[in-house]
Image (cartoon, rainbow, N blue to C red; front, side, top):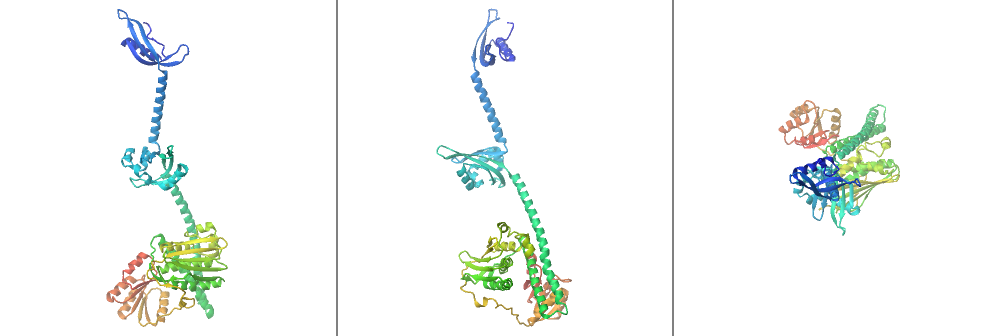
Length: 576
């Protein structure tokens, strides 16, 4: 046999291999190869079985065999191989995807997922997640009520951004969630297919951008605030200095001098309110603002506020009054200083921004809710919706013209709202632009177990009945203070009581006075040269533990005040 090619196979190498096998083994069984049909020139798969027949001398004589067309089987095998490849590619994509894929079977409480899904929840592998019985707690990681509502309405959730907490590590990951329900013929949910994409880094970038924008807005607001603050501080200072110089002139009449003094007093109180607002804001931001909870008499505060604003309202031609929804409690448990501060701010604003008409303060109390409510209604300019949104932000006023036309720092309402919340209440506002505004201040009252309820306004509470009575006493008082102006002021106040006063310019001089004279009461400043008020007080109490010593100080930091209370002062009085 000169040519080993027994058949014309489509591939020369395969043809040579078949011939070689037949020569060496004598037969070939189920050898699969392609052959080309002579007539159609098409290639088909066949299974070849051949057996070599030899003569008596053992030489190949002929070959017999069979061919079976296996093209259809080969097509099926090729299709199966392609399907397996696609499955492997899909499985690789599924396992290595940046998305966390999952399938949840609610009736079986069973969950399958890929590795990325397990990674998101802090598990090292899918197997570890499964061992932890994660499916049982799966819905606890999601806002289930919201998602269930969306699924019930639409059958799917797409791009739902939520934070999910790792049940293993407790860390929070932001994800974009997609879910789709699978139902049987009875419309029963059999499976939920879903995916999660970790968007934590994107959220961090968005948050950082928001914080940057907020910071820029705050910086802009603070710049505007400091510009306004400079104006607000300089205005009363200008009045104080100017009218003080005028009052000091020789040719000024008594009536004009008294006008100067009254203006200086009003400007000083205005300046003090601005400084107090700034200090309160700094305490709020440092979370150092303390709130008292003591019994306070309501009608004392009402009378004081009514007296404060009645004259101002009358000068503007406004009607101003309190309307009481009786019965009202005689006492509530709160912080009287802060309650008054809130009402002065809100009512003061109402009068400031009302040109004509009225400002009405309606007072009511709910024993069941343990809340007292102040509804302040005015017929002022009113506010636009966008102005209402920014009304309680620090350093912010309704618009730029507010500062220009009416002054103010933009702190009053912000502080008032924060204080109201700290007192167990809130401040709400309703406003119609061009018609007026209504501010509702609600504050917690404490329990009313043994409260006395008042059915009508007592006579002594009405306007014009309040007079400050100066007590008359006997005794010798020492005042240690290095500031000459304060020395003169306290000397006038003490001498009006009938007591005698000795003034010392610092702690060292005060010590010398105590060694020479007997005193019934001692006032002392804290920060003085040579020997300060603390050292002087400690020295004096060692010699006379029963002597009452009162500190007069401009220190407002709570930490320093707490330290001063431990020194042994009978009382701490803040200047001014």
